[in-house]
Length: 638
Ligand code: 0RA
Image (cartoon, rainbow, N blue to C red; front, side):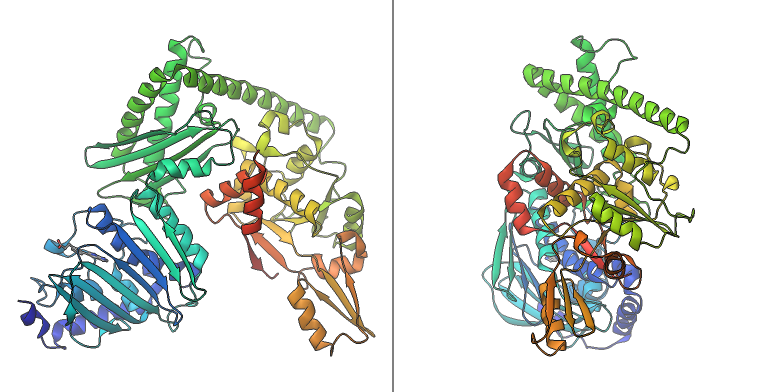
């Protein structure tokens, strides 16, 4: 049978159709992978890895190895059953070839696992093939090793047996095609993060990741699955109990896994996944989890007399204060909704998750009365703090009205009233603030100087935050409000630019500000309104020629350009204050000659990790983290 399917003619009417299909993918790649930039490129890797993960979900695979090769290709090998090579009943060609060129779901060869279709996931490995300069696949199955090579999606030769095999599995290796993709250079950390995430979500799988470009080799394996995920997210916090509450159950065809652990902080960290895909915008599964938390904790609190009547009941926000959770559901036919397809729409899932969590959580509270009491006490305090914050806000608002306009006295506002044109520079220290005021273009640039350290919002509830004058000034100047009453339409400046010294204090203040934005005005970051000004590190002068350098490499390049170090005066700036107004304007503030970095939140998990570690109680993880990572910023020249 195998011999028969290997001898089909290379070209006939159906193979012409196949080529047309692949051509369509190559003409409009973004329709299939979202974009042709780095994000789209990495999507190709995830698509191939997801196929191996499907084998894990089918219980047929325990090890996956991903390799980045020096020739720019990426390989994914698994010990699953191997892609079937038997003649496809409809197309009369090896199923492998059909999978590589047309389908991701092939009738009787379709694997009976949770689909990732919807959104950009699960588009099929043929899309990866179409967008690759070449793609080689090896299948070990039925005692043989099979091999086929494709170029730009089309097979260059029929499938052939290349040797015996004593195990089963699939190995796919592809080189992304630079003629259809903007970038073809894989980013190791991006891939490592996703593989690590997958190893948490699929407890027991071992994912090895080798990068032959730099000789590194990492292994991701978490026997504890999402429980370990929650423990890792909470590693820098004081937790209220160990281990996390965990449940794994099924309702109808939906598989539900949840891990929950409270810490003594004031923020919520929740990650939700559907069929291993992150759903940062939530959806019905998250609604179900939240409903269960509110319901079960209120029931318990009322039964034990912690709250009385309906009026005093705990809100969702109250019961989620200090909660770290990972929710992972597997849904047979997921419907992804929203602009970025990052929200689950299946209505049945809400009730399924809700009932599963209600049951498990009630049981946990019964069995752990001391922990239960600490959770309720915390939620009651959160509820009281929320009430105090509401009063403080009311007071601030009324005072603002009495004082007329209510803008902070320290703010040097700009003339323009068009937010889209306006920029707010938040400047460290009164002296640099003074220089910035002189150097700005007062038509559209406003300056708000900040003195000393600002409050660490990671360790403070909203009511305490609002007692802090610097924070009140910031909130008033920006205009959108804070916490659950954010209104982006009231944003007074479309660019909010942090301008701090390039020293330890500067970076600390910057992180505090970013924490404030991230925690209390997250839309500012997600909508791309927050920037970091890049001040130069060096000024180089030779005769009348002046150049600025923003890094050591740039300094060395400038030195070469100026013909060496001879006769060059190099000044190293230790702070913004060492520049005069026109220098500061030219190097750091004026559009056209400055460089701004736009602050992005790549994913909630990573940002939370960063902020918790930077701002949390424990020193050691913080030190390690600062060594390994910088704040997530992308370069943007404006
Ligand atoms: C279709 C059916 C079966 C396995 C696979 C596809 C399969 C696909 C990929 C992609 C990467 N690794 C893979 N491993 C398996 C089931 C075949 C059977 O029942 O024997």
